[in-house]
Length: 161
Image 1 (cartoon, rainbow, N blue to C red):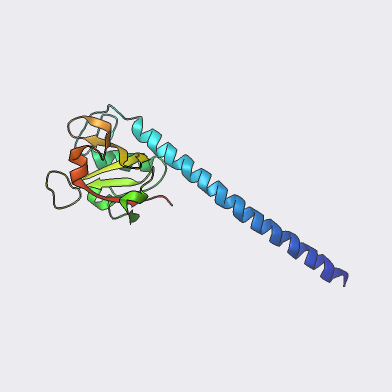
Image 2 (cartoon, rainbow, N blue to C red):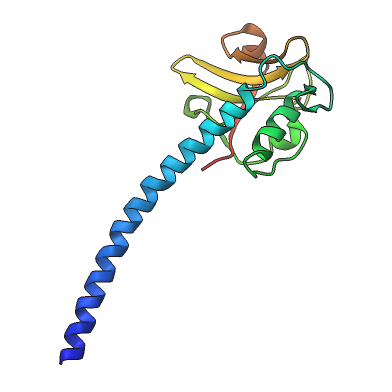
């Protein structure tokens, strides 16, 4: 009888600890994810002003997918090298569900396939800002309010949970 009571006490104790730790784990996971997103954005925006370089993945020059590739690689998140391949990773989400840390893809210059990518840094009700490497200005922050990007927008992908 004594063993049964001890057993029941232990079961109740472990069960209650488990439910508490599940809540703590979920909150901890959200904090870790926010920290990861902020680290990615900081890493990418630290390169503002770096020139554009086709095929570039270093501070001597980035192309758009090279910036995203290198940024995610800094947090040990593997991505393909090309923007059209990066567009196949993660989950495509509606424009109005976009959040910081998502990738935004474009078909520029009347391209038939995705050929440009940026990392979303800010989301407002009618505007998304993203860091990317443009051929003319290098690494900059742009907006979906700009006609060029508004007309070239293709999709948003969520890479992080």
